[in-house]
Length: 261
Image (cartoon, rainbow, N blue to C red; front, side, top):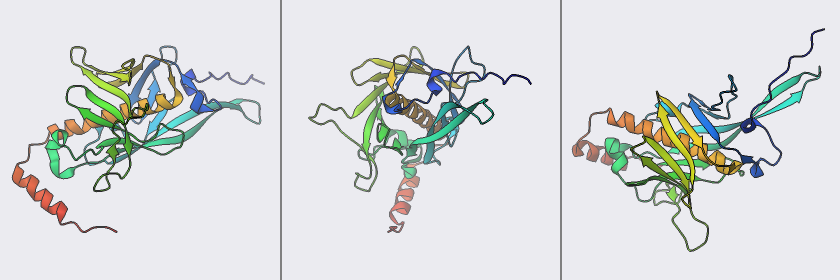
C-alpha cells in the first residue's frame, strides 16, 4: 500500500490558534486576488486565501452598498483513515458598507454629509475592533476612525470624534506619498504599520510590523475598503459631469420619497 501523501502545513498567517484574539501576526505581504486576499510568498506556489470578499472590491461602482468580509481559518486534522485533511472555517468579521449620497453624483468626493461615514466596516463579530470607517482628509489622505451606528440626524453612521479620555478614536492614518506612488499606513502614534501599492493592476499591502490578530484583521478590511473607494472614484470620473439643475432635481426626488416605518 502506498504511503499517505504528505501535506504542506499552511503558512503562519493561516494557522488556527486557540484564543485568536491574543494571536500576534508577523510582517508579510498580502495580495488582493479578485474575491480573496492571499499571502505573497516565493516559497509557496499555491498560497491559501486568508480572507474572502463577497464581491471584487477593485471593480465596484457607486451602485454597490455592502460587501461581506470574512476570514478563512485553516487547520489540519486527521481523517478516519489517518490521512491529514485541511479544513477551512469561514468567519464573517465585517460588512464593508458604502453610505452613498446618490444625488451628489460626481461631486460625492468633494461633499460632506455632516460627519457621516461614507465608507465603513460594520462589525459582525464580538472579536473585531468594532465599527471603523475611512474619513477623507484633504492633505493626509484618510484616517481610519471609529464609527457609531445610526447616530446621525437621519440615522446615518457617524465618526466618533476625539474625547478627553486616553483612548483615541483613530486607529490608523493613511497618507498618499506622491513621489513613490503609494499609500503609507501608520498607527495613531505615527509609527509605520504598512505600505499599500498597485502595480500592473495588482493591489498589495506590505505589513511592516507585528500586529495583534484583531488589528491585523481590521487593517486588511480597511485596505479592501480603501480600494473600493478608489474604484468608485474611477467609475465616477468616467461619467460626464452633471449640472446643478440635475442635482437639484435629484434632491427634490429624494425629499418626495415616502418614509418607510
